[in-house]
Image 1 (cartoon, rainbow, N blue to C red):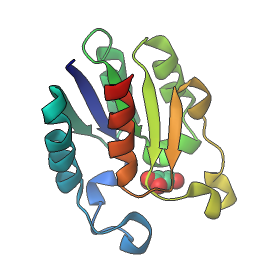
Image 2 (image 1 turned 135 degrees about the vertical axis):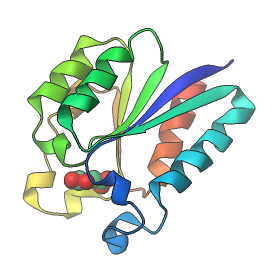
Image 3 (image 1 turned 45 degrees about the horizontal axis):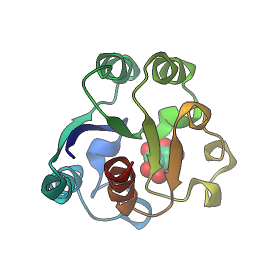
Image 4 (image 1 turned 30 degrees about the vertical axis):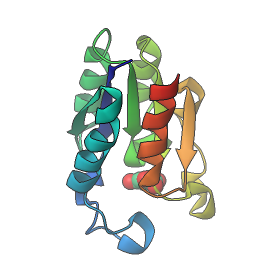
Length: 143
Ligand code: DHK
């Protein structure tokens, strides 16, 4: 029992709660980070929460996760649909990654239907709101 998870959020997710609330909900990223930490604590899991709007920073954090985390819960924001470099970073580490999207990307614009990253992730949770982050943590705790 026990472990350490990295909660990683990409561009524009720092605007959660203010940004298009009809699509992304009213919780702030800080709310999600605090609630997730509290939810995993009884299982002796710890969450490190990081957010960046910058592709290179996200890549550095993914590379540095090797050996330090049991899993990464990752909402890559718009980089989901574009970033070969983030895909390569995920492939370069053995830490399993779950891709999370708050919105149902498949009900939205066609350019959101493709993920560059999903093929190298352990799994993907889409369209279940911020609950998706909690479901990803539950998966890591139970596996
Ligand atoms: C978040 C974003 O910022 C978008 O660029 C993605 C994702 C969808 C989400 O639903 O959490 O297309």
